[in-house]
Length: 270
Image (cartoon, rainbow, N blue to C red; front, side, top):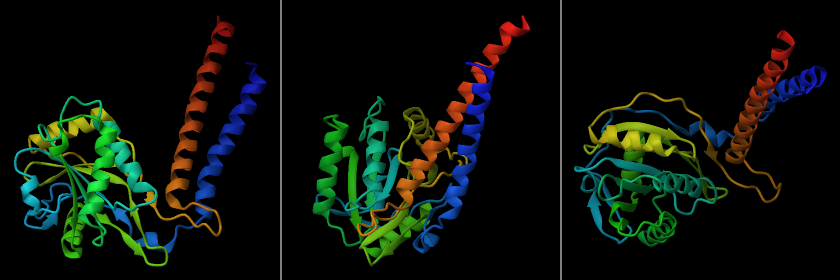
């Protein structure tokens, strides 16, 4: 690669990098997202006396799924058209390489934050993701719950999860992430986004099993909003993923060009 072409490429990459924040700034987030977030409440203990219903229709206190093993908690809603399936797909993909088994070394707790959803819907979702997980004998370690509005609000508030209902499209605006909790129900670690590194998840489960509380992590929030068929546009979640992917691409290209430039200069110096 000649130096003039390298310089022109660096200029192009730099201009793309500068344009990414500008594009994001020009589009204000919808007002529904003002009340949406996922705060880190490390060390807080979830109310174990809250009552939820599992996918079989059995009602029990939240504490019945705690006590012996660490718990991975995901707050989703089963009828979510976009982000929630991505969260559960990411969780399933991250758990698949681990030698740990749900029901043996940890528990998976999926809780719908839509109080209108039913155990039947929870059972359908469980069947889908157990099929994707494809590890027979671990069914007892996966729990897909529904609950009333008060119990959901109390659980969500404890782990810092804020969501907003949009009546015009009958959907929820919410952020993406999962939480690791200790066997005693203490918030131990947060994982943001829709993809989770298996080694990080493994480490979080080991620490949570020992009742260790992790550190505050950087937040890169992805939001679920809705698709508007009248304008053919996607909202925050898709745009954030696109921008994040574009930013990563820019960084990788820039690093590649810097390495090439250094290689070119070595023979000249010799």
